Length: 317
Image 1 (spheres, helix red, strand yellow):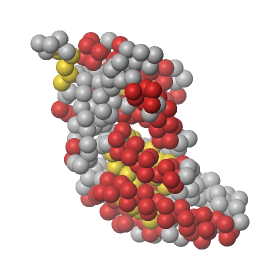
Image 2 (cartoon, helix red, strand yellow):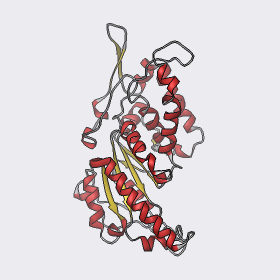
Image 3 (cartoon, helix red, strand yellow):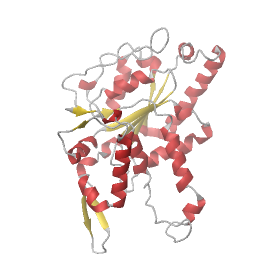
Image 4 (tube, helix red, strand yellow):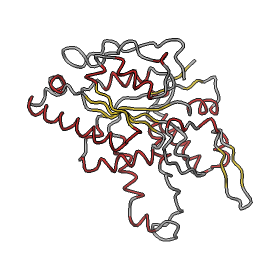
């Protein structure tokens, strides 16, 4: 029997409590979550992370500073950055059909919000100057990339797995660490382009073991005629979309080899283009798509016609 905790109002509070327990009572709480905890001669706590939690093949060039407080590369992420009406919803749930990937839709700009919280607290000059001191803003030194576990936990909280009540918490967490967690966002571009480079660096620092998909549509004429863009004048929509596509290209360049760029105007007509991306993600040919899902189609632009798919039985990682 499975229980979907994503519908439970108390679930975010429960997970938040778990985070508090980990930081306030690290020795025994970390053992509960599958870590080996012991004290060295200097009576400093050391944590040995299970080897099965790490798969650096997903992020071979990632920079990760491991500490007893946080391991930034313990989890893999897949972030889909896109423009509105570029078949991003269709792409999101096709990715979710791949084994070992759990995707989510929009989240009201979580990346900017997480960055703002980090900047507001850990970017404050008084807070920075008071590191390791005993004064009005004093606090213990925070290890590099320590905030990454806070950011990653928030992404996990808003799209948790469907827990199996027949398994222990330790078994569940061990299994879910293998899952690639992802989401789509059209709001990455909702702020000034001047901040793009800083946000890209924030993702690299706090989601270091992540891959980025950039999805746009080169058929901006058709895109501008969608119900989403018809609210604006035709000429205005075309110019905006042309600017968005150029900006998405620049964002992709900032991520470098960490990113893969897709043109929905191409892969919607030729599914083999999409399957090249599936191969880039590390899946075998048995996991290639044979057909497309269909979200936000029809005359009103908000009709879902094909929402589920099954891959080959021998599709696995």
